[in-house]
Length: 307
Image: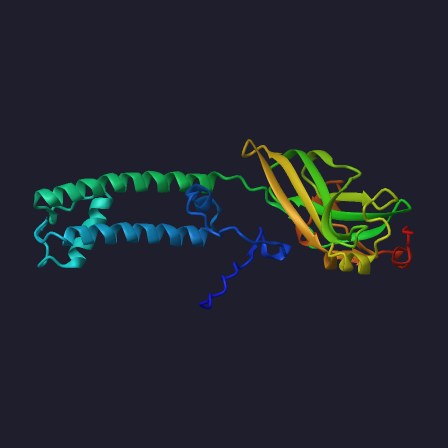
């Protein structure tokens, strides 16, 4: 029997942001059957490159079509491809300078088709550009680390976020999850997402810093975990935020994630709100990442609630 070449294994594709460390097999990075999703999900540099490539491809195709019939365009330099290409650019943009023009029936037909294509291209590009500019962004700033500290006598997981805009957000809702690698009773490893209840998951007005707290008690999925155990379980926190931005008059969403190395035990957040002599509060966003050792750091590190 002839030797068959082994099937080429597909490469895993990262899901979401690269730092999530999650990948999928059997999917395409760019699905040409869904061009709208592709166009709005591309980065701005990628979108600009894709737009330029489409514009260049259209003009090259029509320049080639004009070149199939010498004399189709009047006042061209010996039927040069460059002249046909620049005539295509002018026709695609529906701009006529009065120098080059269709000279035969074939030239008129091709230029008429190109005008229709140019109008459709302009309409599609304008719509996509509007969607990309009109897509609301939350601009919620989060501290780079989560902390585990003692609060009111309880071991507490804390995360800190703030509205990064000068406008007010209202009806902010937060949900916190943890992804853990666990072993079943049969010895199989699997990933499981647990809900981490927050002491305050809703904020009527989101203006100043918001410290989200999850008490690690016996009912908590993090019960009994220390820093080493979280690392061994490949723990990752996910925080989802939803709020209404009154300047945009729409709901905005955001998601943050923290790996186990960014969950700091025995640390607490430094104050980032300053009160002046009149009692007015000012939030210093440059201090959102600042941590300091907890006064009871040793107690936190030795605090064992697990079996």
